[in-house]
Length: 274
Image (cartoon, rainbow, N blue to C red; front, top):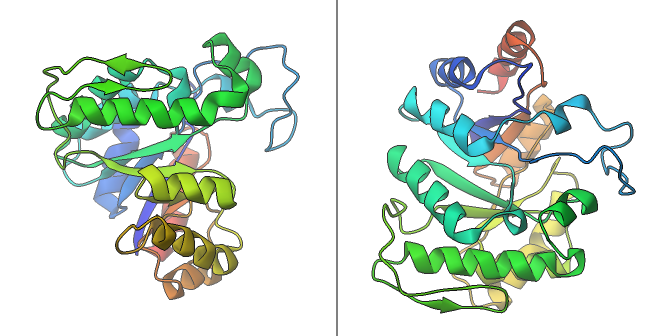
């Protein structure tokens, strides 16, 4: 089982170049970064992780810029977004960012897709909250048209693109795509429709939810099984042993949003799981 990490990298934490080098040298398999463009100072949306909202949420580095730095100083470290708020992006520009990072890293990118929780943040991007899931699906489909081997047009409910020359292409046609979110028929249906698997935060209850996801996958006519990668996990030997018993290919461990010394101490602690 691959052991990757995630962290809220900010202007106050360890820098991406130092972290990426340490992760690769120590034998960790990946680095996933979250995304928030901004956190409105006044909001009615309660934070699902509790209030007050941790300081790092309003200080996150742009994940694609930070992952680009990480890619440049590593050779095998997996790179991922956990997650990209797709509805808040122009899909043509996002398709170019993703394809460029995947191309320059030699196909190491995992594209984590999410729908968000912050209504006010999304509203500042012009996102209608009730349609954000449909908007996300539409934008992913448009991006895949741009990644196609031949110029391919796309006309969707929310956006369209002409058949275009759009290079570079992702190394494997499209990056591995995982959707984050809470277990349920709606989410599992979306995963089966247009993703490669699920990025469940924390990874609780997987013994019960995995069969449900696999049924949705099979009902959609998808071959094989969906990937499941528990995300932002607070590790323990028993928890990781459970994931291995479930046959999961990868787990993403949560690092503190802290300075270099604390993050490196945490990596020392996490080394027992490699």
